[in-house]
Image 1 (cartoon, rainbow, N blue to C red):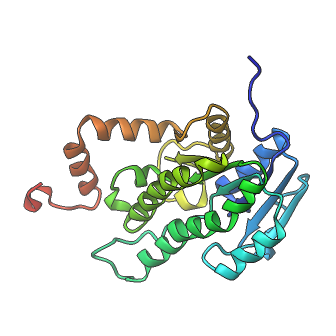
Image 2: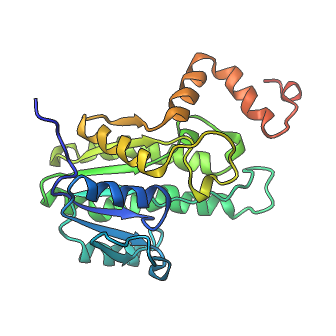
Length: 254
């Protein structure tokens, strides 16, 4: 049976496309024969030489700004693949925080940003044959990760959104893949030690998952191992997470 390549001939829009996983998607889409890629960048002036050698159309796009999202939808009416990659990690605690607004901003980008883009492009995808939506999420959204503060609940919300989107858009033939990402060599994870996957490998695993018809994909070794440890013993896993915050677990009664 011939191998499916959903990227071949696709017109894709990638949010947060100027670095990290977003840039990896742009590169891999062209490697797989994409027809056109719109690179959504909040500040186009930051797109300097990242896209050298790639026939990318850079568009200014802030996923938290409804007017910006609307302008993108008017401009990019031929999109057949939406990759919601833009994300924000404030690296603050959720309850015992020194910045009460940090969690709100994480939710604005990581959940409402995905929702804004999905609403704006759902009709476009349907008109262009259904297409696909790939939501770049996190292992921190698959279960609670206390050391990631408000980032974890924002990604959990986006994981739920992915399931609801899949159900609502099933009638128009739009596939929705939730990408559970672990440890990746990006600026966001610069503080993390140990083994990290390259952004291009995450993009490859994600597009392979779309080709295979998967709805949820663990994109790398950390996502697979972390989810396995959690499901084997959720209570123990929670205690280990708490220790990362130097919490006295026994005093919490867990």
